Length: 494
Image (cartoon, rainbow, N blue to C red; front, side, top):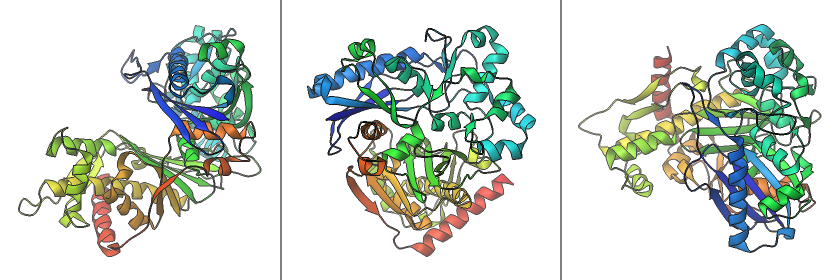
């Protein structure tokens, strides 16, 4: 028996077909061949057509079926991971009212701040763990204020993953973890966040009914099944935003467990059993995929804009695109821990949330022309990104996240031993490297809904551990280098 998982990003839709009993991945595909279209009708805006997500999920499914020749009736369940914080509006006939306002659209920042001030910081954070900020609730309020006709026409306000599930099942539904990422869930009342909805003057009837994040959410309609080449009645059994989904894909479910990614930006996502929030909103807290009112599981999310983008910039600077990342790692390994005093602040990709939305900029500090060469620049960049991760992770520790284990996928910056060993050495955490993706995790989680696995830990435990990085030597050297780096950062923040 098999399951299929989708990961709806803003650049592509990824899909994976998994053998449920073993966790073996039969195929991974991505559509389209080039990046999906994204519209910017005004500065700071970002919109996509939700119909494109459906179209490319369908295209990816057909590619998987052709590649594997697996019979449609052997695929028992579907899981969905999706880009967080977007807004999709559909009318009573389930037709899209306007393009989706996606995660990186900044138009609703002032709208969210106005609501936060009206509700009050203590009440809003105590009940919702977050400010409305630029999240889904604020985007819905922006539509109500600026596009009254579209707001009136909308029957449902949904997240991107909710929309794909609607197209597959014909039923408008959402989840608690999805509502929490939109700042539409009240953790104290274990219900819709009426204090946010009322303060914004929104219509609570536009929120779809709730289904479990892991469990039966509906089944493929005959029309959707014919469109995708799948069997009618196939269960949609899992749904979560990309960051909780990535963490779940790495079997990060229990307090003290942490997932991380190091792409263009960096993300650390740790689980706690406390209704924890950061008063300064340097990190955000959401309901994890296995959260319940009786057994809280809160995902604390740290995002660092200046991560892999710096490493790519350094590569282009010192050798150009022809220089491989493996060659960069060899260069960095030629330089001792602490980089002979050279250090780098990697914050050159806009304002950083963990720094209070300050735009500190990137800096290469204490450069000595007589000591430092291009290998030092490479290592300083990697260490600087790792130090930024550690700085943010210490904020997470203040909220009760125990950094005992950090689980990562076998891609991006965590392929660098310099980077990974720096984080392990400074946090004392063990870093486990798994061969997985968000689409694979979504597929495995969906199997729980049709009894192909007993629970999430057993479903995700079938994945292959590739490597384990443990805290090593050079403790004093790393601590001294980090202290120099942090001092430089704090001076610029002051």
